[in-house]
Length: 133
Image (cartoon, rainbow, N blue to C red; front, side, top):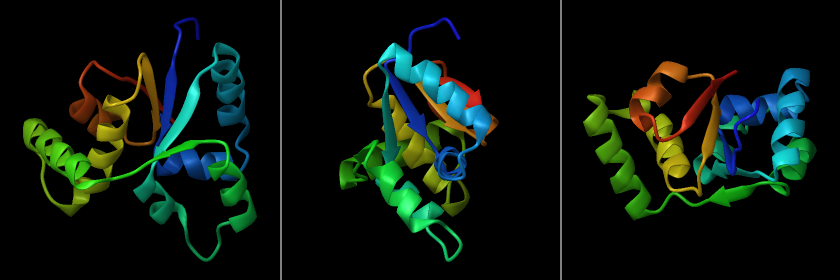
């Protein structure tokens, strides 16, 4: 990865992989860290990854190392506009839209680590580099 990245945004799969200490993801993180990139998640991603089997101490550790962006009324309205522009709607895509909105308001260049490559590409367009997990 040779292109500079200022901000790395993680969706729930990215957070889950980090908590699980996925080797591929950790190798990517080393590259991004060497670039001086900041790591960011949306606040609702915490809800998505929290369940009975999650290692809560690892989750707390991970949260201490990222910037957690709030999902405000303004962010929700912007997310709804992204859904409308992408021709999507409803609860199926709502969380994806909030993650995309978080990515779009970060200092660029931005990389988004996601398992939903197609959906995120529709929501973010070419303003965010989408990296599949």
